[in-house]
Image (cartoon, protein in one colour):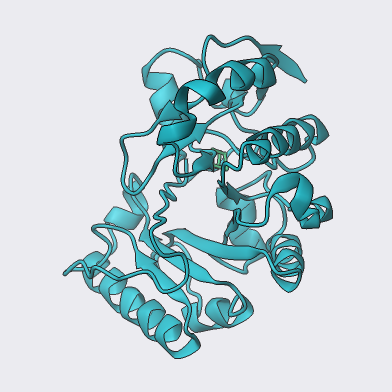
Length: 275
Ligand code: SF4
């Protein structure tokens, strides 16, 4: 795997419900074709040339060194650290990324800094070691379908849906906080699927975040786009209500944005932008 050197690592993100963030890889092998917002941004800024460039990730080789210097500077302001906004911390079939992510989680935990993680990969079982990695972290998985063909088309190199769910359930069964990012949820002209079936598969989680599909020409052409997401938001809200699961509908997904109060995670809000 190729690597790069960066000048800084920890940064305060200005986006919805976020706090501090770490992106310790440049690019992402999962190659999502929704499209991936992070890839679009990096292309616009000239960091990468094209899709092929994006899916050949580069590890930030000095990430731990940077973290060591930056933790004392920011520690008092940090509520939690999100991994990651512009890459995937458990990139599928990339053991180098997993190794570095685990080392980062361990280092953050040493200073009692909580992490909020989101992946389309598979969580390793070692995260059960709460002394090493922390007991208050939140582990999230993106799940927008159960259909393998849809995954092949839109998340071609990510982990199979079932492996993601299995790994997340394992962490949940071991007392860790888990959540699902159901974003970007597809419109029916991309795939016809039963939202309730998907929800039933992940009813064990502590929190569900639901969000619409943006920046996709086909989805935006769907007649009844707004009504569809409004209806889905109601289904997700009702499901969470019944199961006592925390629910967050991303801003702009339902016609009238509902401000939900957190039931399980109190003050912590998370940005789950799928970037
Ligand atoms: S959407 Fe996330 S997982 Fe997919 S390519 Fe972009 S950064 Fe990677």
